[in-house]
Each structure stands twice: as C-alpha cells, then as structure tokens.
Length: 451
Image 1 (tube, helix red, strand yellow):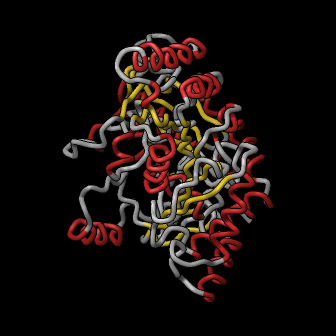
Image 2: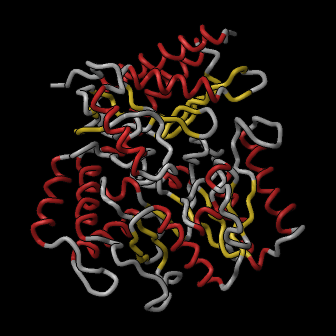
Image 3: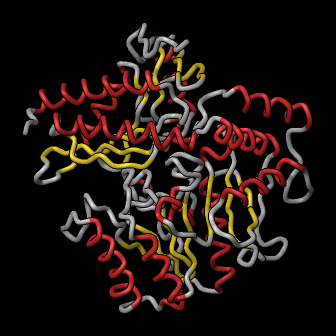
C-alpha cells in the first residue's frame, strides 16, 4: 500500500516548525546553509514528515545519504543488534569484526584487480584528507590537481581542493599550498566556448598538459589528480565518456595517482557501485562516505595494497570505522544487492531523464538535463541562447515545490538536483515531477520567460 504523499495539512513552515527555528537560530552555528525551513519529525522510506504533520516526497535522500530509504528495516535491525553488543572500541587501537567484514566487502565491489586495503574515517572530508596524505606519502611529491566546480569537503586540506562556491573558501586563506585547479569537462558550460563533448574532453586534457605541465608545474612533482566522476555540488555535471580514460593515460605518463571522490556519486547512486565505472577507468584511490554509512557517520578510503603501505601511526581516527556505522553499512550494501537497486537506479533514472527531457521541450526555463542513474541535474537558464543561469528562478522552483510537498534542493548555480532513494516508489516520482513542472510553469509565466 503506497502512502498518500505528498500531503500538506499546514502551510510550511507551520507553528511548531517556527518555534524550533527560533530556538535553532539562538544556538546553532550560522555557517550552516539551510535550503528552506523544513523541520523533520520522522521519516520512513521515501517520505519525510515534518513537526506539523506535513508529508513530503524525498527527492534528495538527506543529501544523497539515504540510498536505501529512511529507516530501512534491515538496516535498523543490524544497528539494533550491534548496539546490544557494543557501541565503540577504537578501531585504530584494537580490533572488531564489523570493520573487517565491511572492508572485505568494499574491496570486493571496488573496481580493479589488484589487492586493496581500506582506511576508515567518519565523513567524506576525512576520506579526502586521508587520500591526500596517502598520495603525498606514496609518491613523495607535493602538488595536487583538482577541478573547478568540484566539492571535496570543508576542512583545510579538502577545502583547498573545493571550488564550487566562493563562500566556502572566503576568509580562510591561506589554504593548502601546491593545489592547482583546472577546468572540468562540462559540455554545457565551459571556458572553451563549445558544446561538443569530445572537443570539451580533449581541450580539458590539453589544458593540463599544455598550460599546467608545460608552463609552471613540473609533472614529476604532481602527486595526484583529484576528481568527482560526476560533479555534485558543482551542478550534477556529467563529463564526456572519453575524458577519464584520457586522464588515466595522461596520469600514467607522469606517474601521477588518480583519486576518484565518490562521496556523493558512489554506493549505487548512478546505477553502478561507483560512478567511475561508467567511464571504464580504474582509479588508484577511491573515497566514499554519505550513503556508505546508511545514515550513520562513516567515511572510507580504498586503495591498492601497494599504495596503502604506510606505517603504523601515520594516520588514524578514534571513531573511524565505528562498529554501529559499519553494521549499518554492511546492511545497506546487502539491501542494495538483494533488492536489485543498482539495476533499478539505472532503469528508473532513464525513465526520469526521458520525462525531464519531455518537460524541457515544453519549458524554456530548462536549459539542460543530465545525469546517470538517480543522480540527475536540471539546469535552469533565463535564456537558452545566452545560457544565463536562472539562479533566483531555480531557488523559487525549489521553494514552491517544497511548499507543495516535494523535498528537493539545488546544486551549482541554478540546477535542480534529483537524487531520491534508490527504492522510491514510482508513483511518488511521477507525482513529484508533476509538481516540479507546475512550479516551473508558474515561474516562467511570472518572469515572462518564453521561447
């Protein structure tokens, strides 16, 4: 029986929500950016219920975390069993089975034939920080290359790579030295003035070789190139198919490691365990978090046994690989396998993309639709010819959709991100898309946007 959602009983934010918002503003750091005043009371599956009783379709999965939905019974049961055993005993100083079992599973599902090992932390930014340390330690080199528009975290090392929004870096310099940013191959919006995917791919690769390596950074001093296989906070940007194989070739020529940041795109979100698998390239290091923990804090860095040969004491985390988080992760992986959610994400994602492209034909506010699996971006523009980002309009569509029962957020400058749980009922998806299209039409009429 599919629940009746969305269902708005009180215009949000309701009276109970407003009271908590006041309390929040008095004690919580203002550095958090809340998309809208949704105050969650409970959640299950793909449905969120706020403190005033409103029910929402969840199209963002708690920021791409709840890939098997909220409070999945198998995940909750695994967590309860582990809670009854023990909650914590530092994995960096002692041993327990759940971290070993999870590491054994991760090395099985990560691409590549070489023997691998796993480092556990608590979050995506910690996984990225660990990957930077490992890359520098292994190569004995100092430079790191990252991509414009990328998001890798907000702690100092990962923030040095992040370049998706200026506010994330403002006031925190100097950051990590020896970090170079280069253009990401975005076929829709790039500095090269072309929309041809193959040309964008080749020009981005040439930029690294011709402008970085041949002008100011000796390639023999570059430890690693860090990338998102699909950019997340930068706008859900999907690169051309040829780019990552080309990047692998370039890196191999110079002995440079490749680090695939799968914090948002991994764990089945795109219809494969890891988004890099869509491009037929095996990275040297993979970072994971968000959906990895099934709603609990967990991060991981996976690399080959050869690379991850650093000595004891070189890196550790007291809470990394927490037994409860590992139990939730193992159950999450099991659910994805048992329920066939990789295949479902791919199939449903294709159907959603088809529907969105049909919407694009009717709505000039939609400039581009892109994605893989259930990681889909809808970029809104004021004018298709100029491609001017419709930032305010995207925020307005998001806000109006929320008030009508669809919990969706934006990415990049003006993109809507569609990232529901992989097992979301189809009925919820089509209802949510109907509401989003209605709100796009309203904004178009009010702003005078037409073909």
